[in-house]
Length: 309
Image (cartoon, helix red, strand yellow):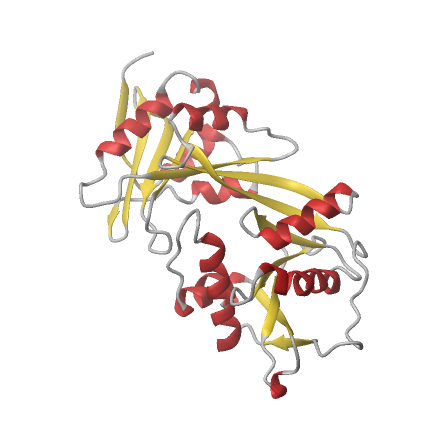
């Protein structure tokens, strides 16, 4: 191999590297490529392009997130014909040198397994870097009628619609997000960032439901919630965020989460993103997958340099 050179990201590299990498293999891979960007100090971000004889063959980035400040995100991609030749490892070494002493030094990365892509190379690369798994996230399609429609006539619980701009909903989403990330990637989600990242119109959020222990006028509080998003294609299942009120124990909200999901899939399929830290929902998905009523369409593995073995 001729000498490997590194340079900062510059305008036009996205188009040049698209020719080198080809189309992304999954929506997650497409999203990962958007991490490649021009350098910035606030928020911290450093991107390097690897080239041979002036021809780009790979790129990598490390960047900070105010939402998850404990680690820097790492993303590296190398042209298929140049993999397993040390280019990716060299990129990571160069990127580590770009991290100033006053920044966090720990890294996290991810790779996604789909039916058409086992991501074997990515998994091996992460292992070689010494990254350990901290989370598994699945995209799952649930079939209509997989759960019996819940009955509310025999108890005080009610389903209510909420505006996606509702302060109550925003607070609930914020608390749930921070809770399910607490043990593996602590989050600093605020009411403002919850709105901006998960509930604003530009996110595609279009409707929200809450299941209360009794009507709000009687002092009822939310047990579970669901936010639906405009699907990527007209014929695709709606993406739905399902969560619960973390002020209650798992045992106290498990039935509410199950009933919320049952309501969602009574007539139509839906797509959920389920982290393994979402214990109630993950257990429900496991049970439905066991009877072929849930289909895992992708599995994303998240790894970190400070993972506990």
